[in-house]
Image (cartoon, rainbow, N blue to C red):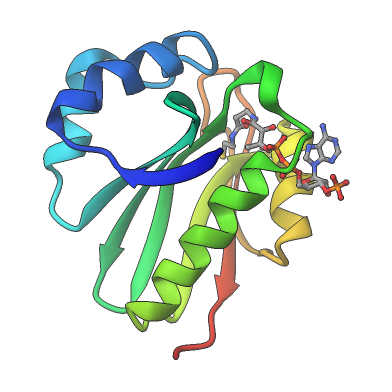
Length: 146
Ligand SMILES: CC(C)(COP(=O)(O)OP(=O)(O)OC[C@H]1O[C@@H](n2cnc3c(N)ncnc32)[C@H](O)[C@@H]1OP(=O)(O)O)[C@@H](O)C(=O)NCCC(=O)NCCS
């Protein structure tokens, strides 16, 4: 059974472990800092009791930014990322958020296709933004408030 839960402080280590086994974006300290950031919520996607996906998003006034989004490798291409994204969009709409924003590497074709699937559009480029020299593509999705 699939479910989504709000991650609390004691689950941060499990988030760090999933990150370390996937895209290795943040250190344990960065995960803890992220958790404490004002307006930040971390959602975990659970299959039975197993954490298979994470989304970190931050609300600033009527905008929200996705700072982290991952599905565990062996569970990809099975609709789980979509479950998490649909949940996130619904949450944003309930909070009257008007724009959902994110940054993705221009070389990350899979993620770009995923975000296009959810009708995110490109609103800017940050040249040579990532360590590997790739550009960051800024994307937004305009939301309808409920
Ligand atoms: C991006 C990511 C979260 C997608 O999760 P997922 O569970 O595999 O996505 P879904 O199965 O729900 O796919 C939804 C749609 O996204 C697109 N998509 C997802 N993976 C794709 C792939 N490998 N190739 C092409 N399109 C893809 C398709 O349009 C798909 O719809 P379809 O199945 O009807 O074709 C996952 O690949 C991931 O964790 N990647 C590594 C982390 C990452 O890059 N995060 C984004 C950083 S900004």
